[in-house]
Length: 273
Ligand code: HPA
Image (cartoon, rainbow, N blue to C red; front, side, top):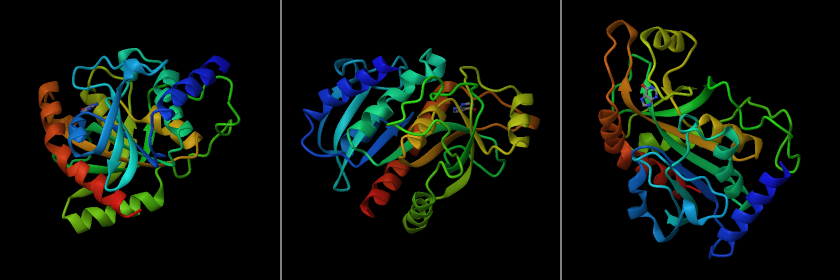
């Protein structure tokens, strides 16, 4: 753990030395939001490979750059491309960028992801504000010795997704005329999509959407005392009684279609700080 801590410090120092301003908000941009680079102002970036000890993205649809710049006049750090358990990254590796951004001074974290809808009222292309999650990956980034300077051994999970940020998101969506559902995200390991029986099980246990990302980052962020906001792009809807395949090309295409709407929400929310 001491080595990990050292690596976080070295990565943060590397980035911090080159940052002109103190970032306030971190963004983790999932499938479909890769185009954010075009709307960030005064941007420069690091390839993940340039940053000491940073994991490197293996997913084709994820670009693998840390963007530094301004969004709605706010200084942000944006991860263009993230790491998934199914790629073989450990929970600790997935937590690494969150620890680094925390070390660089961010106070809140916005995440987006692509998710399969389980709630029958959802349609492909809808957005869902994550109100809560169920970690079904069987893994946890906090396993191992606790770094007490980073956060508590047994962190509370009463309100992992900040209430005030959720309220801001709901209000902003109304103002912008964007449909925003609110629901529970089930985080699974993947990489296979769910069976019909698993879909029924997930719905029965109270989940509205299912995806293969986000929960490791959110657990890390909550441990680190960050305020978290997460929005899912519902790329397909899985109904166990008329179950259809969800080809990955369609998932990516639908996520990309939701990208501008999701980014508009993030931008307008940031304007309110
Ligand atoms: N299941 C799991 N992860 C996903 C899905 C799904 O149906 N769609 C997008 N990510």
